[in-house]
Image 1: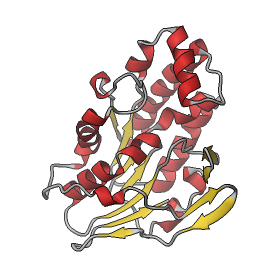
Image 2: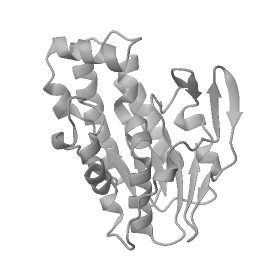
Image 3: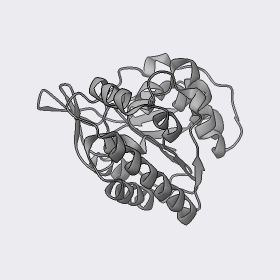
Length: 239
């Protein structure tokens, strides 16, 4: 199984991994690409840490067979950095084409929670979350709407399931799942891959695992993958 996302997946990786393993069964192999500020198509940075794009991070090259299932989430992350919706959609399309998963789920955008923000609060929130960017509320709203329409068409084209994000999953932060709702959110996003075949067990030790490649203060650091294995054969490879 393949999991792709940005900060939401990074914050809920333990839950997403548990949900994936519960639906696939014993000896599940999960390949994941995530991280705060993660981009589908360009190198990104958060404070002193840098990450290659999803398309360039090595995940796609590491797959030795067609994935049985894949989830593409946190798709709108690049909009806050000024990337146009059409370009983001092209990156997501390329990712889906290269994955060629048997079952594909695409997460929608949190458009309902963003729509509730006043222009003033949008600018303030943008300064807090993206301090190097000055968000234009009208432009962001238009790009979100365009990308949401594009994802719907893309899901139809690929025969994928598109999961809408529930407003109740969010708090004051309109783009990150509230801690209280993370379990429900990931259960819903991965629910299209089938019923739970096994009991879930929280794996809090997944926090702090290093991806195959990242930079830290400009210095490239690499880590062999998979970076985590369980006693019953589950594996996590992080890119």
